[in-house]
Amino acid sequence: MANTTTSEVTHAINNFYDRRLLMKAVPLFVHTRWAQVRDIPKNNTNIIKFRRYTLLSAATTALSEGVTPSGSQLSITDVTATIAYYGDYVTLTDVLLTETLDPVLTETAELLGIQAGDTLDQITRNVLAAGTTVQYASTATSTATVAAGMKISLAEVQEAVKTLKGNKARKITSIVDASTGFNTSPIPACYIGIVHPNTTAVLKNLAGWIPVEQYGQKKAMEGEVGTLDEVRFVETTNAKVKEDSGAGSIDVYCTLILADQAYGVSRISGAALKNIVKPLGSAGSADPLDQRQTSGWKASFVAKILNEDFMLRLEHAV
Image: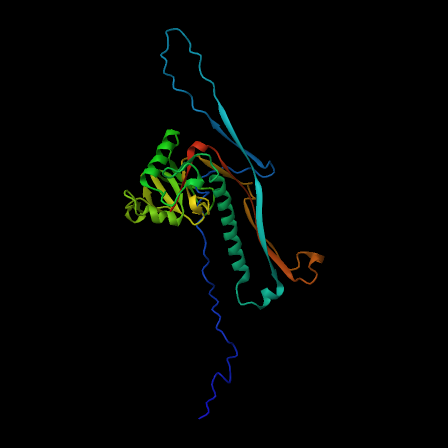
């Protein structure tokens, strides 16, 4: 019997197209959460000055009767930072917008928002990872001498905490609201560690590690994976990794351990982050047939270390 099958009469549409777009792999943006946020008023300047007063020395000499002591003088340290602008855009054609099934404008806006967040997070990470207070795991004395077995450990974390306490670095008691970028929420006093997922795998096997599942009444922060000693660790794939930089060309992982007021970020008020859409035909004679429109973002931003003694970079292998 001669059967007529789809081999002879093929489908008019060869593939079913599922319009539910695939989930995007997005890193957790954490590096700006514990910053001092100070915005610059619009129509002012692009340079911000962070000021710190130096502590007065303890007055341990007893007063003499009728004798006025010489007194102390105030001393300040100013840290300045200059705002820079960042941005990107996507060009969409009229044909694409007319003929595609996808919600292109919505997807484009979402992708640009993710790109903007990723950009500012990585900029902040790079500033923090360039800090001068560094601790190398085990017997390493530089990035190039970090060998494969020199992993993060309880002793390394305790040494980092000891350094911060010796520098009179206070614990962090608040976190910047990720949804607004400036409001803060209180958290129990702690130091904060920012780690890569590969580092988390090592931490989980250490004595004294408390995973978030065992916190009980204590509320975990977004991305938090656990606590070791006096440090609460937050995980992100954006954590700094110095690829092929260690002994034998291994990757060296940088775990940032932060104290209060270690760094700051600033933006221009009203111009912190904008989504800019130029519709079809908005270019005038440069687009005479209304063929192109753009969607983009622009941000004013700067990140700055305010006190090198209030943060530490622990370099190690995994």
